[in-house]
Image (cartoon, rainbow, N blue to C red; front, side, top):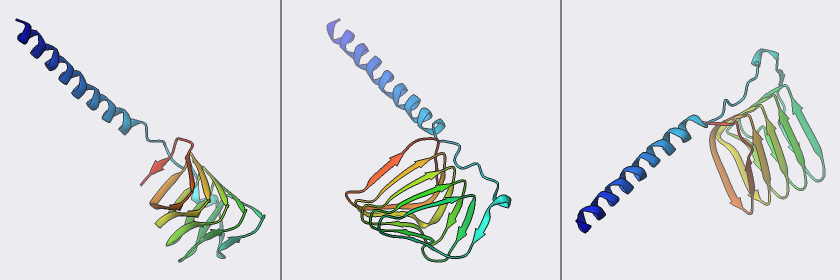
Length: 150
């Protein structure tokens, strides 16, 4: 009887573990955010790449920036804010040094969507990211939620 009880307990634990994994898998699938909610017809089209260096601050709000190579490059202590925008290129964001980028309600896309090196940082909220994220060094990657990753 003691052995039967142990088998039942182990069977119950296995059932709970499997059920928990199934529930966790389902929860993960439903927690993906809505991503960027922008009307691309209202965006201001820009044709020049953005280069930010030193202690500069750059803000893009309501912008469509489509450049074949690297639409945004930030180095040094540069701060970039991207809101309500669409940035597209082979390597959409290239961040190095101590640069820091905040992305809100924007679509970032490229074979490499975001490339971070050195001590660069990025914070992303309510956005859609299409492409790889490359991180080398002591980078800071902050997912603030409600994002869609493709």
